[in-house]
Image 1 (tube, rainbow, N blue to C red):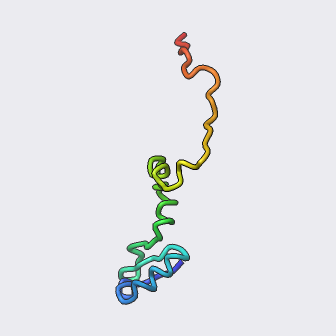
Image 2: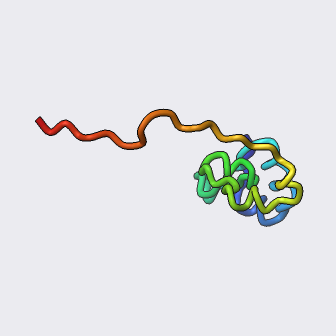
Image 3: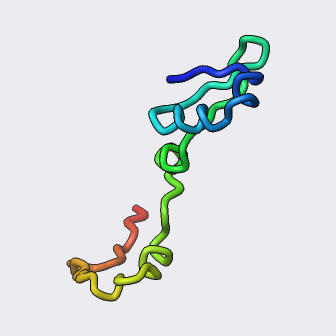
Length: 83
């Protein structure tokens, strides 16, 4: 975990970006944490904001992927017992 003051961050953004590849970078204002710099991969892990199925299927070579989904067994619906 790296810590940069706002002034240090503004002076050397490149160094902060390099530090973010190793983990979150905290940017402080007046000595207090104010912002966090993350790589996009770290952000996506935190938010679950990864590629969706449409994006994955649009990738080159996606047609070559073998996929055999499991068949459902039994009924999809059940009658509700309201007694």
